[in-house]
Image 1 (cartoon, rainbow, N blue to C red):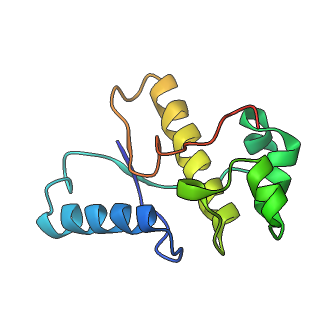
Image 2 (cartoon, one colour):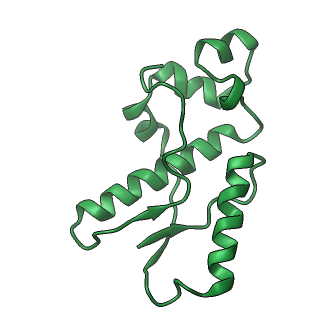
Length: 124
């Protein structure tokens, strides 16, 4: 099982790494018959708030002052950019979706290229 189509519309360098990786896999056709591929469903604000504070999720949705960014760890390698909330919703959504598919018992492997790269603290 593979969750694919990581958003090609965002400017994050990490996003482009995922796009390039998926493009190479698609070009080889290596996974065409071996895996079920699912479209990623972005997480809702409600779902995102299960993992992060209301203040953090709200900060991702709004314009960013330097103080707000610093308060929520959105600096340095976690700097904000246009579309950061939409990208975060895809990352969380893909991770949750992969976990749900694994939890269903139908799959024993899930690959979500957009997951596992979050470096901010969950309690922020």
